[in-house]
Length: 125
Image (cartoon, rainbow, N blue to C red; front, top):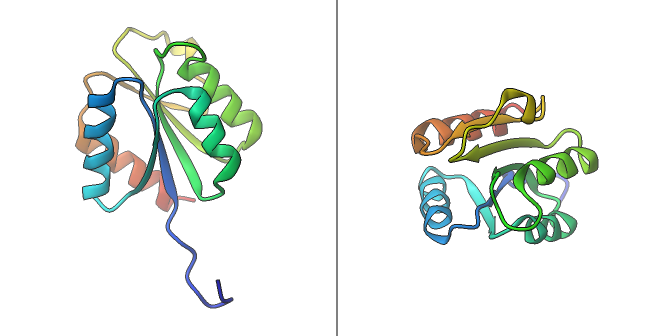
């Protein structure tokens, strides 16, 4: 990239083990002009974070087999303190469980509200 080329727009990583939910949120965000990559679990998400420097925000489900979304959020924060994390879950979550720097959206969430918050967070970087 030449010195005067614009920096590519940031990418959002969607982490969701339910394929239908993941497809719907990914397509909704893409329709809104958000660059998106996806992972079906936290291990795949960490692998993507190891090789992609353009990811600026992680939107993850909490309830996933293996490493859950809360553990993923803590690991993302440890690796990259400036990276934004947004969490979602269909189960009740106590505020004490949610990392201070993360936002939480209960399922079923309003896609427009989530997309607006993601776009706002990306512009604020």
